[in-house]
Length: 168
Image: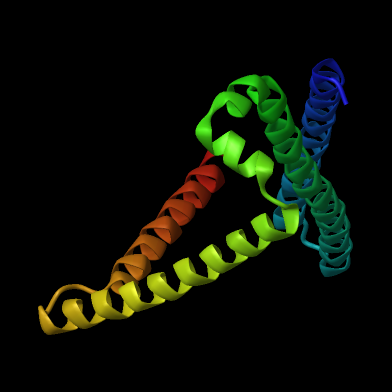
């Protein structure tokens, strides 16, 4: 595959992502409008129908989210291939490029798998050691900070909701 073909594919994929994001945005606007109708609707039956329509729109949005996730993965692959194509010559001239170029793919995969497994093992040991040090040093644990961050993020959301409800 040529670099031009990769770049053309990237542009097409980017355009498709933007088109899908516009559709999701439109769905979100429709859901907001239906929600406001439901808030103002005195009839429970109409509220139920509006809630069902909101669920339908949410399902459509989730389906588009799946597409966007797939497109994002495809874009990352494309960007990686483009990077490799653009840097192929300089890569081949480096010592690492020469070494990797002479390695069997199975050997290289085995090396990466082993290095990854070793890294995970080392990170686990590091985390346990860090936890022990934090406990013995009476330091605040990372989970407490995570809970605090989560709480603040929930407050952001509540304030945003209060502001949007007050604006209508």
